[in-house]
Image (cartoon, rainbow, N blue to C red; front, side, top):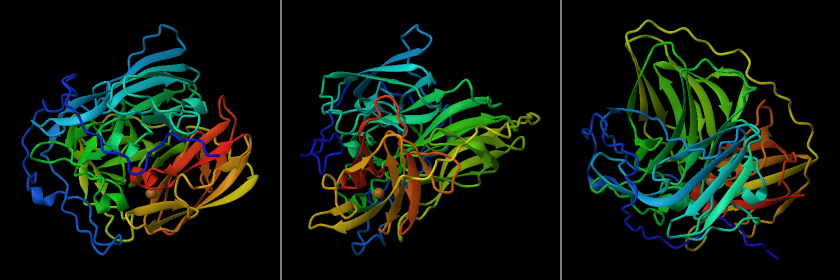
Length: 502
Ligand SMILES: [Cu+2]
């Protein structure tokens, strides 16, 4: 007997967006520079993909729009805690249609949490009870999945213990904050379409027991991209496009916390800023470099590293998070956060460089600040009780590309059975010619050889990545949990399955 799972539905129906007058979205367009110099308005340059020979080669990504640099804020809205209790965070989230101004003077129909992209940041501390009163005012069913958060399976917004929330219906998500870190939330129904329309936000859990970092700012930086018609500002339907089916949907405009790249921020040389990066894109790999500044990674997927680690380039795959501390060294200079090319398929997957954020330092004398030398103690996991191999593959059916786990596509991938309280080694063997970002719900894993824990990890093409999965008990941990590729079109295309934990 197969339990119906709440997931991305294969080849689901296209949703028709109705124009809504509610909310005015986030006012991105009122910033200083609305000129679109350098922006290629030629319609022929968008959506005109070379289908190549049916392989991955010769399938370059979309030509990026390059709006003129502008300056403004990247701050996100915080969810309002309506509970006076010191250890309860109670918020209301409403999924709703609205319009967002991604391009100056253009309105883009979007699906949002609370009228903004990204949705409000939910902030809590370890030990808090988090209550989210959710109302679905979208025209189709949805859920909220709390990516990376250990919580009861019935609250995960995915898998056999949950059901979709119908249009007009409500649901209360309740769970306790167990682990400090940077997480995010998004739908797990028709995720490739719903996330792309703007349904995502961050959840930040702090731990008063963790070392305080001497930073002047602690900001959520959610990286995304959208495929826009430059003339109208509307999102282009791309799901039937051959490249989108193969490589996942990549847009032609990069977004940083819902604002078009490339935004300028005024900073003081020497001061430290914590950026909590989240990659919420369907498929785009962001390989980040801070040209003219320094970047020290302090956390991955929500967990502090043992010590700050200088990084010149940082690959952030869909679903993954990384906390970094950035600094501009000299006064009166500009450092640029840039997404540099990364080849995620054997051919044709690389992108052109994209300038995301500029840090423009003032003439003030540099501030002096440095990070603590240690951040957290780490205890490696014990020897695994079981070893499994998961082979990631792809094949062509008569109508589309099928993405597989051990040669089967969801819902035909056999459910794994694991025992609570044990550690398993999973060898994730990528037999395909493109990278896949692997995500497990509900539990952390430790990459073999690494001294940290994660929930999302890149598995490069033709490469095996080994992880130790920690089936550590927590409230509600028994049950079915999804694992899948976080390129949302690949999950929709079959690369998704369940592990039943008892
Ligand atoms: Cu994939």
